[in-house]
Image 1 (tube, rainbow, N blue to C red):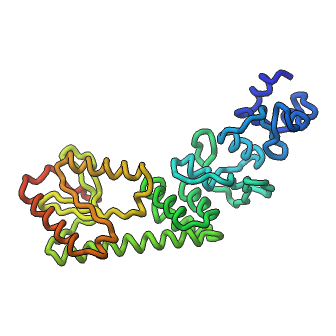
Image 2 (image 1 turned 45 degrees about the horizontal axis):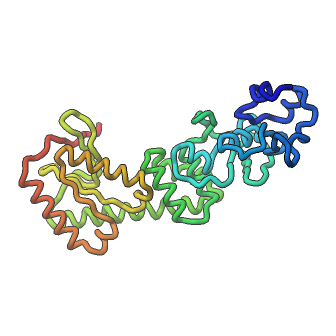
Image 3 (image 1 turned 180 degrees about the vertical axis):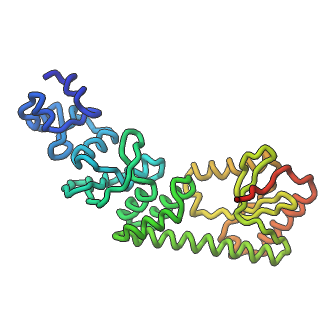
Length: 304
């Protein structure tokens, strides 16, 4: 049997020993011996070359080992969802009993979550992937970084993560701790911001309002919006600004504000807590500056 034909019957060069035998390769393991042309990936799974497997080949081999109905979760699914997770073990959910090996984790799930095809692989929804990835973490900082990125990039919401952690409570203590800490930090920061705003006489009914331009295009969703002068106040928590992409999104947001003629004040929650007098001076000065120029043609989008 020519190797070209075997590759045609494989998936990215990954093939089962059973398929090889059906094609006339009576002893595929002999070719997987040290120095041989192939390599054994898992019991019953062969890679048709002896070099390092690519990530896609690793995942393909794991799914072939797991059998029909398996779906990808955990760190590998997070990466395919575009999230910054360190892929250690390959974590698959399977409909029946199966035995993993090494860095392959096969976990029985009943029912197996509905999966979507991403890059040719069946992935669980992002919220389940994030929760399962955090189950294998020991560092709260690492879990916080992943959860914050998932929320910031719109892959899931705190509510969907909380629901997933409640549904699958085994090993989710770290996830629940991080979500509680983030929720507490955000609620405390908003409480402090509202209190300071009232104290300095800059009251506004617009908290977390969506702002659009005259053309209807959405500009941003500031934490506080002073509609009378067109001033935005953003309480930028470090928990949601871990990587370069997060920083780029913040710059893009501020560029949209600038292009629309909106002044923006950025405040860290820690500074709001520890030095509210300085924040108050900055906010009042920004409000005066915004009032001294024509109000930009922007408006609050009413939620129906």
